[in-house]
Image 1 (cartoon, rainbow, N blue to C red):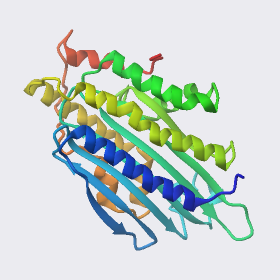
Image 2: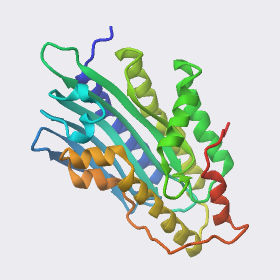
Image 3: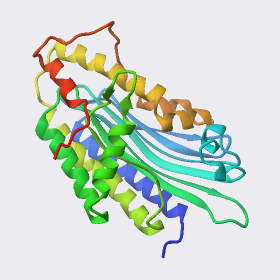
Length: 301
């Protein structure tokens, strides 16, 4: 069929938000998401859902939004001049989970759709998204599970999809000023339209729903692991890297703020607590030092 239909995409995103929130609440055991509905003056709105101080999740947010406008910010049209003068709509689901236990990785996922239209011309559209994992005390088998799930999602769409989008994730979630990856990667894709609407839509759906299969087993597996104050302080220190990436490099954060998005929802991705320490050096041979071995792009499978 391959007819571009944003309304179908919007309904899927709403159901995906529901599905992911239910899975996370079930895994947490006590925490519940509170919902904040909001409207954007320039057009559109969304549902921000935040879970705070659960049994397992210290803070997690799962956002749905659909926003629109008559004109894109210069940051968008500078690289895509064909978007100038077009009305646009962007919709998606974005989530970040910050667990209490330092042995459970922080996780991020996002799936989105963008369309820009102009009378008398074909629409410009694409899908984007992915998911990535940021451990503090990594376990090799957890990282393998994460990447095997990512590969299984991609396989029906072509042998080249997982290696390409895995590398894109490694390259994108890279802190240049720290010379390290944000975590152990996963999948990242953008500007996806070359397969036609139906196949691109199916792939985006697979990634969005696949996040549950990738992350919930890790949360369940590690949530009872004992930890001490040293583990907690290292977790808070490493969360600082997460903040640095989101405020300096993340395209979604920058686009949201520059296009007049809702600041509270955009910055929902920030951890509730983080710390910075001058010139921190992990003790040689310690569990904290071992993390650096994971912050280099590599073939986990």
